[in-house]
Image (cartoon, rainbow, N blue to C red):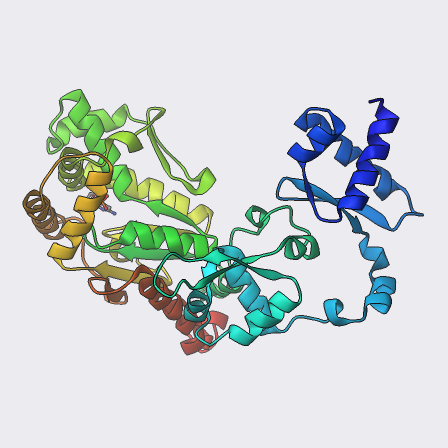
Length: 427
Ligand code: DC
């Protein structure tokens, strides 16, 4: 097919299809490769955009394209279709839409859990407006319906995919960013923007990593697993045949060590001398080496310096043992997450089994108790609850309950201390 013919065919196909046409199908229909189909669609879009006499444009959604109307034509279209689609959404509808878009597929019960109110009628209205659709059912008793956003939602909000949603729940993000923006002023009177740090401390296996990850996704704030740093250094020592408790040998090792933390992609890479250590540091040996090496002041200084630098640069959730008590004692939000040794050992065993590490529950309990004792009895920066940290015992809680509790604390922090936010009424 010649170029002109391809463009004509493309326009006709998109017009006739109405719904978004996947690039793969388009490529087959036009008898071109997928990349060429994408390039043709982009050319058509540019043509429409350049043409002030056209009310059309091309939109890409989830690997598909469709013809759409330009926003400049919305008024005349509203007059024709009536105002229903153009009516402003209520706050409740926006909130529900956000919950669905960020968590899809979700059940009505899950939406209710997140919003704290029955959302059935709001969901029904969103379905009516074509912004939300039923997307199957959950394979559990009662088979609750799963909900997802529609292509129409993506079109209306100018998104190619839900992956393009800003990496945050805007509402929550605003809330927490305000916490940091309105930190008290220094004595000099000059406003000092302290970093927003959320500290999550607690013993091993209490669920800190998982809640930190979920909270990070929910708030759109990066999260740092500080334990991985001690693990990586402990593992390097083991690899070099150095005892992780030998202070002088570790000092010499650290003088030759370059640690970089890469949080891009939201998946932490803890690089030591250029190598990502994640594949090696989750074994019981690496855990014990981490606990041993973390006792040494030289090692702690090394890691804390990096943690403080990262926390100054950006809003950050840090999970560890001493974040609220030592690394960032003035963190605005602090949690101390615990669980019984038995519960923690059961969780750790599952993780180890998944990672293919052979061990027994008894061994894991012993390991956890030994590490608890060592981590909390060391002289420097022991693993203790900061006096102003909120303790959450996760033994009998679901993950969602833990996250909800944390989000409540963050919201309440704002409500309870408006003076704290604005800096008024403080010394
Ligand atoms: O959280 P984790 O199990 O990955 O931590 C590994 C070890 O590192 C743990 O035994 C205690 C130590 N650690 C520490 O001393 N301070 C931190 N902030 C984080 C971990």
